[in-house]
Every structure is written in C-alpha cells, then in structure tokens.
Image (cartoon, rainbow, N blue to C red):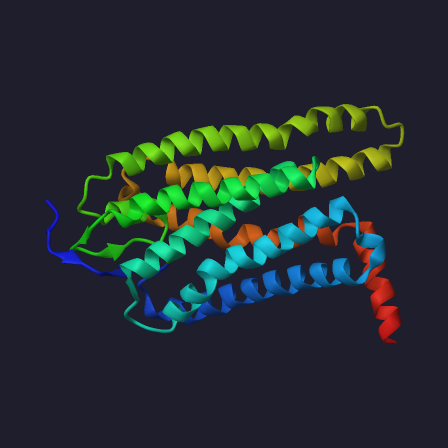
Amino acid sequence: MKNHTTVNMLVLAGLSDLPSLQLPLFLVFLLIYLMTLTGNLLILLLIFTDSHLHTPMYFFLGTLACLDMSYSSVTVPRMLFDLLRELRIIYVRSCITQAFFFFFFAVSELTVLAVMSYDRYIAICLLVFSAAYSLVHTLFLIKLTFCLPNVLQSFFCDLPQLLEVSCSDTFINVLLIFLTGTLSGVGILGVTFYPYIFIISTVLKMTSKHTRSKAFSTCSSHLTVVFILYTTIFYNYFRANANDHLVEDKVASVFYAILTPSLNPVIYSLRNQELKLSLRRALQRLQ
C-alpha cells in the first residue's frame, strides 16, 4: 500500500545514483544537446536565407528542425541542471506542464515525419491534433493526487512513471494511453509507411546500381530512426508495471527523448545535396 500523505513535489531519480557518473553524463548530454541545436539552427538559417529552398519539402524540414529543438529543450536543460545537484525536486504542476509540452512536441514530430511526403496543410491539421492529444492527457493528469514515496523513476516527467507515483485511481489514464496510443500510433505509422510501397517499387526499377543503393541508403536511414523512435516509445508506454524495468525504461527514454532529435538533422537534412550546395553558397558569400 502507498502512503496516502499527499505531496505537491516529486523527486526525479535521474539516470544514475552514482556521484562519479554525474559529470560524465552531464558532458555527454550537453554535447548531444549542443549538436542538436547547432544542426537544426543551421538548417533553419539555410532555409530562411536561400530562396532556392523556399519549397514545400523544405517547409517540412524547417518545421522538423523547430520541433527537434523544442522537443529536446523540454527535457534536456532540466536534466543537465539536475545532474549538477544532489536533490532533484520538481513541483507537481511543473511536472504536468513539462509532460504537456513533451506530449505535444513528441506527437507533432511523429506526425510531421509521417506527412513529409504529402502536403503542408495536412501537417498543420495534424499539429492541431497533437495539441488536442496533449491536452486530453494533461487534463486527466491534473485530476490525480500524488503521495509518498514520491520518487519519479525517470530524468523527466514521463507519463508511465508519473502514473506509478500517483495514489489516485489511474485506470482511466492507462486506458487513455492504450486507446489514443493505439489509434494514433497505427494511423501515423500507416501514413509513414504507405509511401514506401511506391518508393521501393520505383527504386527497384532503377537501372543504375549506384543510384539504387543511394536511394536505399536514404530510405533505410529514415526507417531506422522511425523504428527506434516507435520501438522505444511503445516499450515504455504499452507495458504494465513500469517500475519493474527501471534501467531499460531510462535507456528507452534517452533514445526517444534525446537521441532521436539529434539524429534527425543528419538523416533528413545534412545529407541533402541542395542543403549542402546552399551551405557552400553561404560560406562563399562570407569569404
């Protein structure tokens, strides 16, 4: 039985309890965060300043770059701050606010990745869906009370771990995860993979072996990131007894909350030939 002394603060367990690991972890994740910001800011700068890149495709890449920076900034700065102190306390209202923005940017990122080959107006509609999805989960979180022990087994306010430290009945919250997660997950995955039926068919018809291997390399890079993102999210959100696999949960969280936004600039943009040409033109103008 949980102690039913209600609290208005939670303690974030963080990635590790070992003091000797705090500084190395801080430096590693600071480097990843700076790489994420630098890569995505560079992409945005090139898209805004080069008229050759004012096309629908680069609208999506620019949107993805903004989402990557926002997505990372919801969790990483707080985690870096916590790595430098012993007691990682966060108010419940701040935790729920962080959870809302994490849901919003995570679902927005998934939808933009899914519709990049479609239409910008569909992307805008799906961003509205992301806001609604986040709001529903947040409204049900606000109704919960939290009790001792109030240690959240994560480095940020992730939903499965938040439900574990609540002393309220979380049946509706869990049901909501499964219903919204299944419906939106299957829908977004379907939209993501549907174009690949035609892409793979087209690639197989290519006569040039070099062009074919280059196309497959690009597709496999995209699919690898999508696979990592969905696998780690499903592992954390669609499994009972979140506290039974603490280390695995934290590793999965690092993948979908921190590493994926840092990979996106490389996978979707920095390997793009037009962006490389734009970067060369920008560097030549500076000389």
